[in-house]
Length: 91
Image 1 (tube, rainbow, N blue to C red):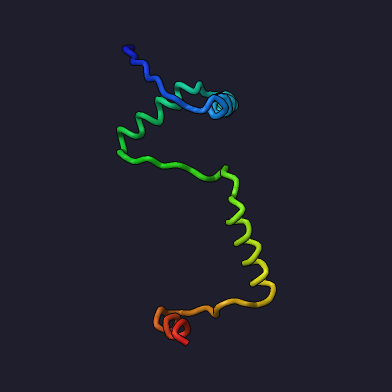
Image 2 (cartoon, rainbow, N blue to C red):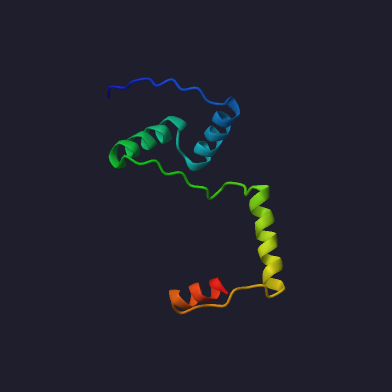
């Protein structure tokens, strides 16, 4: 199989962490990068998953605020149609 070399610049810590994750999943880092490139060519899209991302402090503060609103019953009513919702918002 013919191969080409791609040199990229990345943070050494990110590379090391990515290698650990790839190893845990049973892949080489090179095979995962190749799979990403093939998917990019095939779909012409870039998709990133945030499933393992740590939530930001701002997001966590919003979650806490929403939990407080739920406990204190500061909620909007439910609606069965858009017109009723718009009417409620205009009050």
